[in-house]
Length: 463
Ligand code: ADP
Ligand code: MG
Image: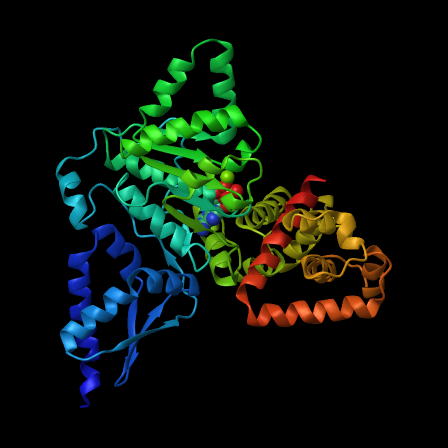
């Protein structure tokens, strides 16, 4: 047996040492997802669930991993990562009676809160158990679970961002629900940024801001949903800034959600932006096919209905925007089948999905909206996108907008060219080729395109 085949053993040993050196939370969060994969003389290869995970682990722990291994083996070993194939796991149950080391104390002291009770404002159905974990949300789900286990210790604050219907509110409530049952002395306050704003304004009008301050500054866990709503609300931002500082100093846990990265929330003070991103920031992406299917299957089981796999596959093939739309399509199909007393066959599903797509909601994306969203994203005006300027600052966003126009509308190359200041269709073709080849080599371009498409869809559904 060659020497390096012992590397697996060394890795197991290294893991034990690393566990001693970092907090349990960090260990659970990062190292439980790392599997030994392979090794040769100079390298030890580990597998991780996603490139995001790999980058984070490298940045945080590569040094620690390599030195720990070097101490154990007496030679230098390079640690390499590979990305595992997609995997879907239901979240592990997280109860007060769990057997994790940190839960021991709590297991002996069962919650005094009634099992069926819920913290005010929290939806009991939004739990970690009902949240399906896939590559699109694994990092966010793990972070949320780690926080729910030990609020206020490591990841504070935590910011979860992602487009509509991707599970932000679900995760936020899951944290609240878990803490409610496992930390029975904790005061949990959940609020949407909109309600926070309205409550604050009312408290000024009614001259009782002190009550408002007491409520929020006494929270042990403060959950604020949809902070993008705070843009332009200067006084509320100011108030939240002070609330934040008070809670942060007292080591109370805060979790925020936003439909976009904080840097893209406009008209929000820089110091508040800094606070939001001071801890851990995690994002949610639309689910891939397998995860989407697992989510829908879960929903059918919960509702006690049987839906054929082929129907679920069809829904997931057709609807790739977000989980909310997936659920809406499923509900519509089931409701129809129940109404007319028919089985949910593939034909029924196809017919119903057709209506779903021809509804104005899904169908009114225009080049005009695309130009507005893209211009806005790059801080340009739509007329600049359509104009003659060919500097890089304008040309690249323009090419992206052309590419997206071809992807998400029915417009032909010629149509698109006309919409962009009467350009020739070959210009559009060139733009599309250029963007697709850049997307293949540069994942950030791909990310930007996905973000833009998501926003364009949101914008069109409001139009
Ligand atoms: P957001 O707040 O990001 O707009 P929500 O949390 O309201 O999205 O999620 C929309 C719907 O999708 C909810 O019914 C939620 O339960 C469901 N959902 C989202 N992600 C998942 C998931 N991974 N597993 C199960 N259900 C999910
Ligand atoms: Mg939400």
